[in-house]
Length: 161
Image (cartoon, rainbow, N blue to C red):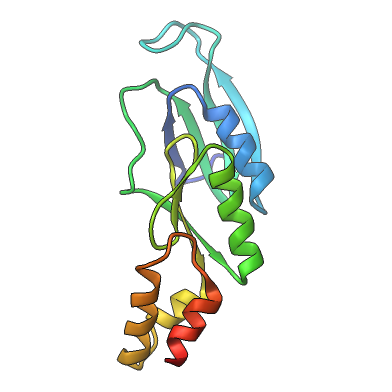
């Protein structure tokens, strides 16, 4: 048996845990799919032998996907924040999530097809909104508020004024 992490994020899915884990593993570095565990008996939203849980890692973070059924949905109250280094990396993750049945939101946020929220956050943006010059930070923040996917060149232009 594999060593169990002390703290693991458990994500509730309506039957898509394996597919989600495989998508995350192929999309993000330092991600993988581990063991799947089948239900030893019937449960409210599944039958004995159905995949109940799947272990996976997303960018080094241990997770368990639980196929718990439709009772609970993901919300923006939980999201993965992925820091990107350039526009190409930002575009790659954004396009992978949105292009695989996901949806765009505002300010660098998007949802995958299972309803899980992702913040695709260029380091340029994070540094800009934390700039010690309040005028620069405000210009960057104002520019961000107009965006869905973050446009790094537009953030840099806003910082310059």
